[in-house]
Amino acid sequence: MNTLAHRVIHAGHPFPAGARYLGPHTSHTPIGVTVVLRRMGQPPVPAMWPRPPRWPRDEFGAHCGADPADLGRLRRYARLHGLVETGCEPHRRVLHLEGSVDALQRAFGVQLGRYRLPGQRRYVVGCEHAPALPADIAPSVLAVLGLDRRPVAKPHFRKARSTPNQTYTPPRVGQLYGFPAGTDGSGQCVALIELGSGFRKADLDAYFAALDIATPRVTAVSVAGGRNRPGGAADAEVMLDIEMVGTLAPGAAIAVYFAPNTDQGFHEAISRAAHDTRRKPSVISISWGGPEDSWSAAALAAMQGALEDASALGVAVTAAAGDSGSSDGESDGQPHVDFPASSPYALACGGTTLTASTRAITSEVVWNEAASNEGATGGGVSVDYALPAWQQGSKVPQAPNGYVGRGVPDVAGDADPLTGYQVRVDGQDEVIGGTSAVAPLWAALLARCNQSLGRPVGDVHAALYRIGESAFHDITQGSNGGYDASRGWDACTGLGSPDGRALLAALAAQQPPAGSGTHRRKHGRS
Image (tube, rainbow, N blue to C red):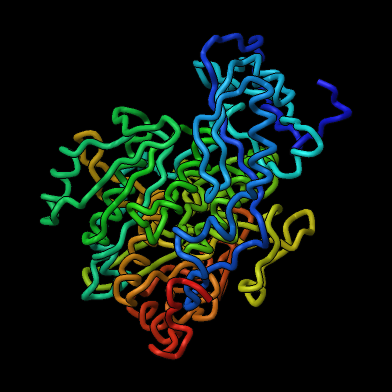
């Protein structure tokens, strides 16, 4: 390849310390990649409550999809290098290609190798150097996903290591948080993003029967080769997510998007869910993530584009803020925040320790059991995403490098495994916590709000920050290591845990009267 005639798409992504290079990848099995393209036109406007989406899903691509000219140049280049097109979805701005190792290396200027990551038994295929493309094509490509197949995220659940102090069923926590009566999520679909493992229907039937709740409609959706594979270490994550949503929004349909734990799989799962015209999720819940600096720039750009699509389409996204305190599990002594929770298009969900009497909450503080190795809520300031307009009155501190970044989390809920949730996993009753429980909790609450309001709340950030303390239990005690709780928003629990009835009333009060001209747009057009 003539490197002078090519342009690197993004900076390379080094392997972590302790990773071992085992040699070149020489398999004869073809590899499939997903090329994510820039969008044509201007970025879409988020559907911030009470503003409805400007375009429905079936019209979005004509305005915000891939430019046909960009696709044409990329297709010609792929054919020239012996790559086969296996799919194209211009509305999602993705072109799927497949080719031999040699063909992919020539086309994208990379060297694929086999690497063993610290603590892992199996090797992964990856490349340290970023893909490069001709100068007339590179500007149109955000990312080439699938060349690097190392894991990008971990599930944010925590099993109690010692005897819990107090445990709850999810419906009990919904009662304590005032989930609005007369709602159950009917007419809504909640999407769950899962990067491994799976569920067994027999477990779900047994769990919901014990709570005298009908088993919800759960559909497994295969993405990028992923599928429902129960028996893995992340079964607890999958089951926790389903059981939280299924008990707190029992009338909602649940679609579980299973994808490989790679940059390609994660992006495809979110993008597919956001654009799904069959199941039409109104909320996406994500309980997986990793520190911002553990992602490649290309993967961040692709994921951010998928989350931006969801926001513009009126799909709310909830994301776990992490379970390793303000360090987010990093060992450099600096604070870090978790992505995708740090995206301004995701409602970042932090964690609390919840204590309650028979009737009401008696205490709620920042979840921090790090001293006993029981985890702590993530939270802090992004170094990748600037402070959003809707957070400018929240006194978000600067990041350690002085960057004026987006504050994490936005909201919170019970996450301490010592005050955790009673769930069922692989035939066993267990107690599980983690911010992984908070993302589906908030997803269920938003689904119930959508039902009552008659349409999805969409990107709810601005509305929540306008509402402020009146719809939240403000958490003012505790620390996540690098940040302390305080009155109002803080980098441990955000605005606080929900008062569901007050939240729904406040959202309804922001909704323009029917017939005002802004409540609905005919055929989705402005």
